[in-house]
Amino acid sequence: MQDDTQNASAPEDHTRSRFPTAYTILFFMLIFVAVLTWIIPAGQYDRAMSESVGREIAVAGTYKISESNPQGFVDVMLAPGAGFYDPDSYVANAIDVALFVLFIGGFLGVVNATGSIDTGIRTAMRKFRGKEIWMIPIMMFLFALGGTTYGMGEETLAFYAIFVPVMIVAGYDTVTGVAVILIGAGVGVLGSTINPFATVIAANAADIPFTDGMALRVIILLGGLAISTAYVMRYAAKVKADPSRSVVANQAASNQAFFIKSSKTGHQDATLTGTQKIVLIVFALTFAVMIWGVSTQDWWMARMGALFLGAAIVIGVIGRLGEKKLTDSFVDGARDLLGVALIVGLARAIVVIMDNGLIADTILHSAEQSLGGLPELAFINLMFWIEVGMSFFVPSSSGLAVLSMPILAPLGDFAGVSRDLIVTAYQSASGLVNLINPTYAVVLGGLAVGRVPFDRWLAFIWPLLLMLTVFISAALSIAAIL
Image (tube, rainbow, N blue to C red):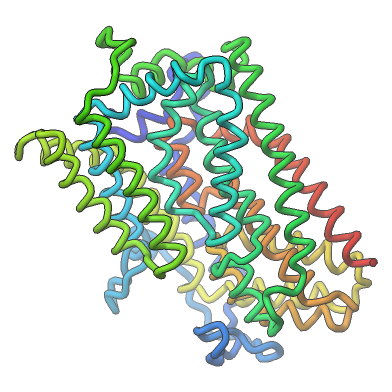
């Protein structure tokens, strides 16, 4: 890979208007939120420790105006650094995620240095010739399974550099590869069933068992996955039949050269050596161990980063790279994803500004007031759209649950709407927004690795968003009146 993520996602067609980079988008959003802290009154709810949630949650009915703390120029300049760690308390924010991304890059750099991935992709494509389209539903199902069970998000960043080349060799484009991962896992989160970072924590905050409302969530999961899979497969088939219909058609040549290095060496029919097969086995086991650790052992970024670091060393030894090539490959690979690591910090900086400006609770209080006295059908739909709006500013599913559920869930009691339906509306809204949310680092990070400009992603996904919105709204409305 090249060492400039910004260039990796920039269109080649210089005759077109140049859409701002991910960094510019995030910085303008940072400034916008800072401006809001001068307009929206500061306020706070009282907090109390919840044993079931395991953290402090807002107490309904305790909102009060606070002394304003508008964020100025210095605060905006400090925010990107604060996105990684608090400069006053030194408490970590997104530094662990950023380091995890760099370890992934280093790991992939070492694997690429062995030539195993490129050769393995071409070997697999020869065996799957004529059946490539079926990789899409299979992989989307697997990513959705990760999303619905344990909220697969940041972990997906490791897969883009692997799966996007597979889609290119299969005759599709980078958007197809990104869509399989981002939409697959995203729809899983949207239809979370036992996801501890969405369903479970929201249900605990709403003071109900997380199994309440499970049937509707399964319906939303399966329906959303079916709609999304059909959409991606239709787009992929269209691109394969006519590459000019790709939303990133002007990048086709550079994407081919960028992701498929063996296409420049003439070894199109190369076969895997014994060493490369062992490397790929270790490669696959690394991801299997990561999934096992996250889903069953409560692993998070530090342990996942250590896993990829250790696996890189093992693969370097197996591949007989030598000390210099091993370290150079690791550093070069980390450099490839440095831009993604910066995106992670910038995205978190927006949340830092909003929290320091004390406007999050004020926004929530306004939502609380707007829902009062509404009939059940209007209540659940407005509730959904309130969560949609809040998700742009609070992209963390667990953070949004802790912020909004203790306040909004009790309001459903007065409207005749069950709390489990409110939890479902929250997680559906959060999952839907996080398919395009620029403040959710996984979106811009995944697009950067896959070399898909943000405007091209929006051009691809907006019809699907419309279909999913109609489907979710219909499901919530029917459930509210039954």
